[in-house]
Length: 460
Image (cartoon, rainbow, N blue to C red; front, side, top):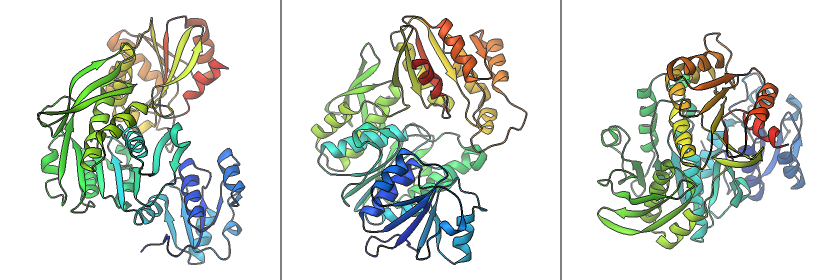
């Protein structure tokens, strides 16, 4: 059943309205004539912006926060079943849907929904596609998992013609979406706390592609193992792309990198050159992301000139190889990488970047991921000249007592002989770094938790 209908605006109450994604969708519904209210535990710049629009925000979790005339309650994945507002909605028979369900309902109103999925590269590819559509004058609605300065954050409310949405596989969220076109950048073992096995994860991607209509397009990175078997029953055409395999439908040729590891290449369709593309982001992984984005954009009929300009204008999103500033003459970069493949791509790009000594401060994300990929994490970090481990960011998990950052540090030293340190607090880490980093060094703070704070504290 569809609960969010633009043709029949109603009263929607958001539990967790202060989240950067939820606040964006709250503004969208407000703009579409819905009565919007919400609650969160803390006041923030985001909730203050909502309040300035006339949206009521309450800073507590109480049953009485749910308005008497409320028609639908939307809640974030972080909300527990015993949340007082969620329990009140159920007691009163008010439909309660999670964020993914709401997004799925909203997507039904758009002519073209471009879903970007994959284990890695979703945020970058979503951002690249958004800039291409903006450059083409198509006024897209955008939902992206990182802060994209061009749109002023993670959300843009555009026309009903095109929606570009980062589509996460975790807890099968993307199976509630309604894509008409999709890019799948890769499929690797991830979120094993939910999927348990890579095969289960691949099956979820199969279900996702089954959602595509006959007149849609599925764009797939050709390096995905057995992609042709996995997606053989998809109703729409499948287009392949690759930065390294010239047999793909679209590929990159004549790849070069400047002194800061920013790539340039010739986009190929089959054996025919389409034209040159120059990027403003680093690494071979972004050549791949750009190739896939350009491939689908061309299939959508977007002029190549708009594709060139859009990709050139993309300079990154927050926490994706983001330059933060300099301390003691050392450049500080922050990156969200937390899966070994992402970590390797980031550090390989950093090795090509001008530097005297490469320092990496790594904060593992979740105990389950650290246990599952311990060996791969150690190998990736060994690319650095010096590694500093800080404690695991638990996120949604409890400490099982079987893994720690100290254990990772010890293994890196034993297996690879890399210079490695462990500190139990950010304060100790920052003090150590101030005494060690010097002019010409490159310091990367890496992880999906709050490790970014270390670099920001140093800059203060």
